[in-house]
Length: 397
Ligand SMILES: Cc1cc2nc3c(=O)[nH]c(=O)nc-3n(C[C@H](O)[C@H](O)[C@H](O)COP(=O)(O)OP(=O)(O)OC[C@H]3O[C@@H](n4cnc5c(N)ncnc54)[C@H](O)[C@@H]3O)c2cc1C
Image (cartoon, rainbow, N blue to C red; front, side, top):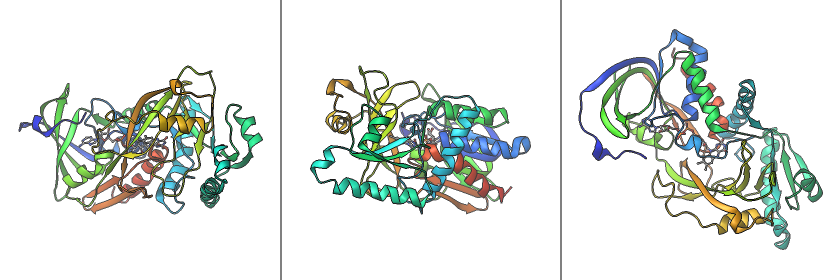
């Protein structure tokens, strides 16, 4: 959906808006930061959010599994795991406090019966690695035998596994909409349909130029000035950083696709069921992903793609997803899986290796904060990222 630069024409700025804090990108992270800052500063600071799409959260923030992760899949020494742990508790409490739906389903990480044939060694190693990470982070979980798995999920067959009760599923759209609404009620301005195309650094503030769209056509340019800038532009955060002179970042797009499970008995699977994937695997493995509306999805896989907006081209055939489903639930057949959608991870590497979130104050005077590589579990971590970024800012306000 990104507009091509050939559509751009030079126009005089329509307006110049002044603010204390400008957030670029209204995904879940931008919305959470806006909400947190609005709680801290109320009307004392002028805060704005600039978003290129006509609405909020239309990119990666609405194209995920909606899981509030525990952090068990992440390196315990990473900021990522700490923020996921803190953020998912905060997000779960927030959803409950707003009366928004939340699935209190927990996560089962299981070893399939198929693994018995290969001697269990590799799968047990994978699970053991996750167990160690979980223990190091103080994440509560319990061991399950094959019988324990059956008791929990009657339609799932597994040799055993671990069950983490404090993992939830939310509707990401309801979450970021509520965060943005809170922020707006406290005076934050959201400017949608505006793509940041240039950033100039001044003595005491930044000059942010945008192109204004209507029906995806450029209708003019705008200019904003802000004493503090936060770049939370997701997949394009490297490009936005480069506009401000920070050219040292590169984001690699990795796609994750989903198939919807259809025409199956209701509540066939009601918990998150994950395989135990090896260390440095580029995702968390194709899992059973129940949603708050009662639907069930299988996904996501993890594959590098040539472009940041490569959502529907070259869809992965059903085989990979069917195999992932049948290893735990043999009653799922090919005709029960329907290609549904994909999301694109903003990764910091083109290799299957683990990297941390980058949240960095790249300029102190005037302050400019870059958030780069906020891939999964960025939804879970969003409210903690907001706390973290706001703490950094508090030393400058
Ligand atoms: C397949 C998949 C599954 C996932 N599952 C989970 C999960 O279950 N749980 C979890 O915690 N996380 C999950 N994630 C990760 C999570 O979705 C992301 O970490 C999170 O959505 C990142 O939010 P964001 O606000 O940083 O980015 P985005 O949602 O991408 O928001 C960035 C915003 O910036 C805007 N923007 C970009 N450039 C400009 C510009 N020049 N000017 C103005 N605006 C601009 C974009 O339009 C966009 O709206 C998953 C991700 C994928 C891809």
